[in-house]
Amino acid sequence: MKLGQASHLFQEILGINECYFAFFVLLIHTRIIQIKNVYVKGSLRRRFYPRSKDAGIYAPFYNTATDARRGRGMGQYTIAVLPGDGIGPEVVDAALLVLRRIGDRYGHTFIERTALVGEAAISGEGTPLSQATIDLCAASDAILFGAVGGTQESERRPIDQQAGRAITGLRRAFDLFANIRPMRPFPELSDASPVRADRLRGVDFILVRELTGGLYFGEPRGITTHADGTRQAVDTLVYDEAEIARVVRAAARIARDRRRLLTSVDKANVLHTSRLWREVTERIVAAEFPEVRLRHILVDACAMELIRNPAQFDVLVTENTFGDILTDEAATLSGSIGLLPSASLGTRQTAYGTFGLFEPIHGTAPDITGQGIANPVATILSMAMLLRLGLGLASEADAVEAAVARAISAGARTADISGRQLDPQSPTSSGNETASYSPITPLST
Image 1 (cartoon, rainbow, N blue to C red):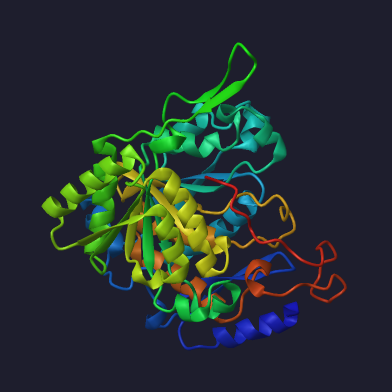
Image 2 (cartoon, rainbow, N blue to C red):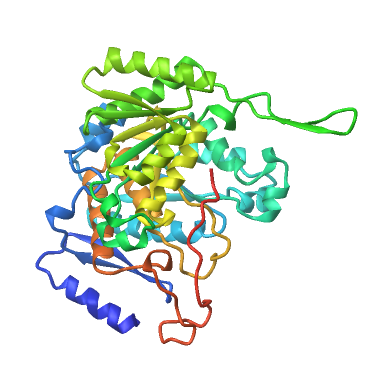
């Protein structure tokens, strides 16, 4: 689609009666994002929160201060912006354009404080996550994160010095124990998914991943060399009851406000940690959430069912490593990992909502960095979760989500969801692109 043709299409959309909100228009091959006012029909509102009122399905993460300020109009909020590496800065810039338009539309002031993380921080500060960056985040109302790592240079370093330590360090520093990842495919993009369209009907689930325990944090860990020169590696999978209980409670509260079905994913036929996980989960749900139906599923069976019959799930809860893998698998349902947002939350409350880190689930995609073709949807939707959960701005979050849905419905596409290749000699090419593009690859944890 040429720029002129695209502009004509969007002008037709703009011709609808009222102006409700600004939606992004990403022209894949021209690196242009425009923000325009469009009327959003009620049927498009609350795409991820169809059963919600103000607080949405995440009501348990709100506090009284958030409820009290809802509807008061203008506000001032401080956002820690951590673009990171690869396509991270590109997709974060796209989300910030939308955030600024929200500020203009609703009269809010968003103070953006940017810091280095990942490879950028290693180059500039000698560490993937500096104390100055942690302090900047601590003084903010929420964190908007891009992506880190993904380079061969980073992967050659010792694990504790790799760029990915920025994200795990932030999770540990702020005790962000619950990662919330919604999955509801856009019906217009069913052709982009390798899963048959009939299996995508009715898919609408949330995966809650425990984020600060398990193999990624357990001790002892490392590689040792024996006297005979042979080497041995060890990672420790450890969970205590308190770690399990708090993430199960978070997931059960979400399930209670949805279809009241909670699926706990474990490997209880092999792992002692999974046996404890199952025992604690059963006790918590029976005692505190009797209205929620609980079922257990082994992680390998869950991996199969996510493809075979994904519509059966409502809310899933699982440990760190299983959740990391299953959410990337679930991305195939949407058609691209570049579409899925996430929120990492703890217990800290600000004046507006729950403090957290909001990021796309994709990685740095070094193969497409700098080409202007990265899909920003996951980051824009993560920013919408930031508005809803971190700042208590439910109406503004609704508007962003509906605007994204409207843009996709109108035909806005990036290469990873377009299902086509670009002729470098075509009028839509800037001359810098290659003939075909790799989708955003899952490089982060």
